[in-house]
Image (cartoon, rainbow, N blue to C red; front, side, top):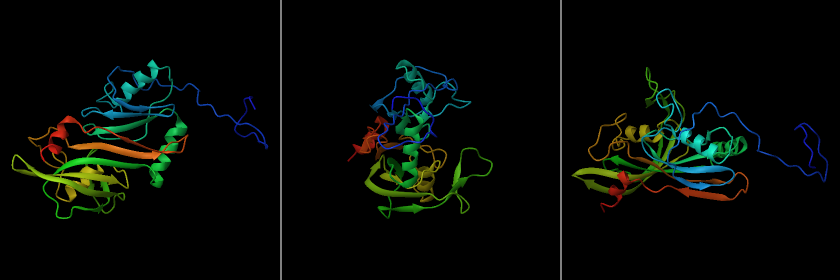
Length: 256
């Protein structure tokens, strides 16, 4: 009723309750760095960004000032939004495509909750080595961190449950090399899940030097975060976003 109160205050019928997200938050843990951002959508709740290859989502000791979060911090400062940087989803440094940044804690929690209950759907496009015998299916294989490695994962019975649904959408030969373009939908979101599962099926991602071999056809793992859909945290309508296929993957689609 236009008065500030604590969250423990009782309410009665007819009261008007307003929740404000305008509070200023400390953002000093991330250095603001100007960089071009491919913003596909923005509203009062979140940003949808098409991330290029070669840039990590989070700062680290090796990428303290050149992560996507640094660029988002600079952008938030430029529009006067003094909020923490809250990426909702995460993709590898050399994976391209959709990354969503929440503009407040409520939105972040709402979207993460949708991930946990299966309402947040993610689709990836990848190019892998070889031709599949089964053109669609589900890979259910637990994933764990590889011993003595801070990065590499492996299939391990003691690992976390991981489920990837896949469908082959195109097959071809490029320079006499058999490849398949595959759509993957994640039921779980483990680190390197698609990369590990495809290698487990003997179809490693093209150019994936961690779980496969270098490729003369592409100089990174051919993986693109292509589409996501979820319910808007405020309006509760189903929304869907897609990221254009990057140039280094487009050529494989154009071969046929």
